[in-house]
Image 1 (cartoon, rainbow, N blue to C red):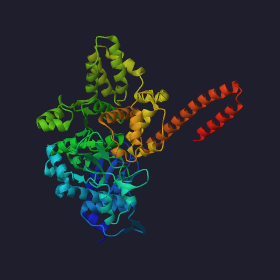
Image 2 (image 1 turned 60 degrees about the vertical axis):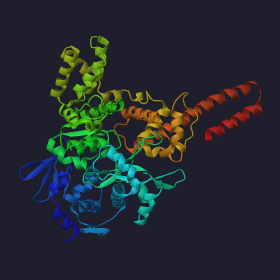
Image 3 (image 1 turned 60 degrees about the horizontal axis):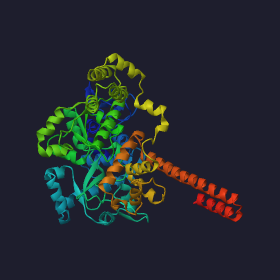
Image 4 (image 1 turned 180 degrees about the horizontal axis):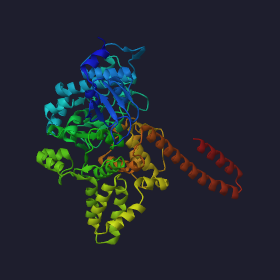
Length: 576
């Protein structure tokens, strides 16, 4: 019996497909929402007897191997490897035949292997090595139990520039492969060094539980380096697709018919440790449409529980808008007063968090109440401001029944007729319509330098570009110049950003989100190159204006030599 037959014998398609979406019995078949196209009515069928799947909406079909190939974006060999790991079968060969086609181990295979090996190594160091004493003490101080550390395979990266390089090279992997896997970074000279040094390591897994990346945290937030650093995106890891903890939370989400989305990894871990297993977090990014869609395949009931600070509120509003756009009406779990996040509330008393979860309410109700708290509803201008903010959001709701419910809710709160609100709703523009009718409004609140810094802060792999572009025309009194200089250093990870600078970057990045809701790394790169070109163009325009005035004066003074000299110098400056 070959590996393909062994895997098919050990795994059934219901279990494999059920890891990615909720399946419900439909006669002899199982039915669910298709993971390969967007749909509201299930057209994706699984036949357990024949061990096949078929979507009658988009036409995709096949067996467990085909399913993993499609859903994980890998070839047959890597699908085989993922399923072999799950079934406990060791895949010895570097190539395998299926029919007349031969499939070989490729670059993606190495990336899966490298990340799995790194996760095991970091975990072993945390549990056993004396160099991880401080990390163990830190985790203990955060209330993390040993069983939790083992369940989430939390690890520790020694404070070394080449620890991972030396270990992986001894296993036969190259620096180029480690760089592609996101474990190394490069300085301006092209030299490789360990990305993670002196940090607690949190493996990020796909839905099947395979480690595909890491997020890391420093032990002491001294303001000199980034508190959290994530793996760079790779062929097997896209930040906007992965939810931290989903591999462990998916069963509880189905059982409770509720998915809770929090901000941080520590929040997820604290919730799971306390028995709230249906909790996940965005993976090193603001929540995306793809992440919300992936949750909707397990449950239609999604609740957001983001931090209680202004950044958390901004992220919450953005998440609600994304959910409404794809016909999901989310709930809000309000962090109890006096606590910043779920982790803090749980440390005080599990019942505090339990009550908050039970009190989850429709997100739009909470949004309306929050706005009204800050306004005087007896003032007609404040009423107009409230309706102007809320009506475009209500307009995103797909069903008439839900829209009417929120119009009634707003009508009661503002003491105005539902008829007048309905008329305003018809004449109001949704958020999308606002963007389409006013595309030039982009970049209205950020100057060009703030926007550049927000772009690279949102996609950290672009930071080295700043070192290649010297800028000498920053706004007077701005913080941009200091941050730019730090980013331009050879090793930006140790650039010494203080808490205020990081907070400023976070704020700019949140403002940028309105234009980059579904941005890919390529989108950020294109935007950065466009902005840098604009800076150069504006600089050239200023130079042109300045030299035009000097050349004109030289001409008026009859100083031909100086005029020629200025024209030559101007031409050279423009070419630089």
